[in-house]
Image (cartoon, rainbow, N blue to C red; front, side, top):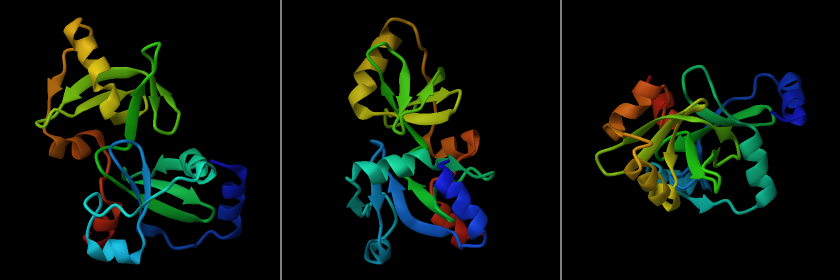
Length: 176
């Protein structure tokens, strides 16, 4: 977490949390969801505005983490901005050397490969579960064909509970 964020938390410890305003899609892109977008419906059907400012995206990604209930958030100074997830908290990119890097740039080591009922590929890693970016699915297919991975079949709806993450903290905040 950035030092400036840590200082803001100390200075203003009781700022209310923010829900529904930030989304992460299945390709690792961030979306800002204003009141009008939120009124149209849930993420990801109504994504909002794609964030394109590199400095803002880097700030979000440096301050992205989960709380004790598996709800992912961006710590924006003193305010915790919970993230609506399209699929999983991480989106994996396969690097040329076959290593894994998350949408935030974190390096991870895969321990298990999963495939859901629609063909989406997930990797369970030392830092959590994530969806393989669609551009990198052919790379994973090659590892399966070589016998390096034997994907386990899963239902996408079972993954949040099994791996301890929440797709919609906003929905959860309204429905205790």
